[in-house]
Amino acid sequence: MTSYGPFAERTPRGQDGWIDEAFRTAAEHLRLMLGSLDGEEKHTYIVWRGDDPTSIVGFGDQASDSFMQAAGSADAMTVEVRLPGPDGETHLYTVGRPDPADGATTLLPISDDRAVRVFSNEVFTADEAAVIFYTYYLTDSVSQPYVLRELDLSHELSEER
Image 1 (tube, rainbow, N blue to C red):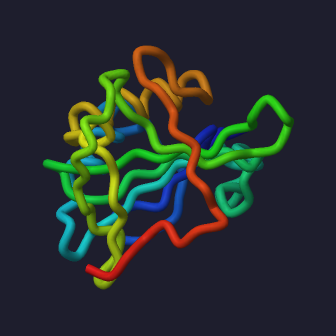
Image 2: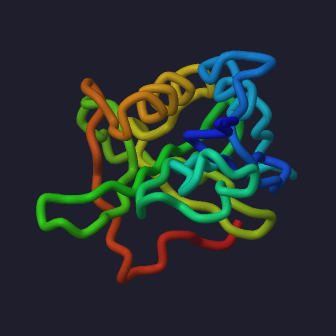
């Protein structure tokens, strides 16, 4: 039986499919995808555990409510993750370094006309984000030293560019 998973992706060009290690390792593939974010035409990248890795189209349904996404450019991007919280519900978090936020914020593009504002300790390069994504790929979690800041979904999270 062929296996296509376990993780699916929506590429910066907007194509959905399985992460396939036939041509490069998952770590190399994740770095390549994150490195292709340009903040102009290619703004986002997302990965999730596919529902049925034995199906060539099983990536269409998520196996859980968890996912990891990045937005911005290869030089400056934000990483967000949706994970189950202690209450059993899923929550959306921005990933950051453990350094205290100094109050400075950066506006990162998420589409042609929208952007999200994050603290300086929550801005990553493609190389840094690739490590976070690969850890998520291996463990379905974000490991230390990174910290999570829960996003308040009752408020608009983006603003006009």
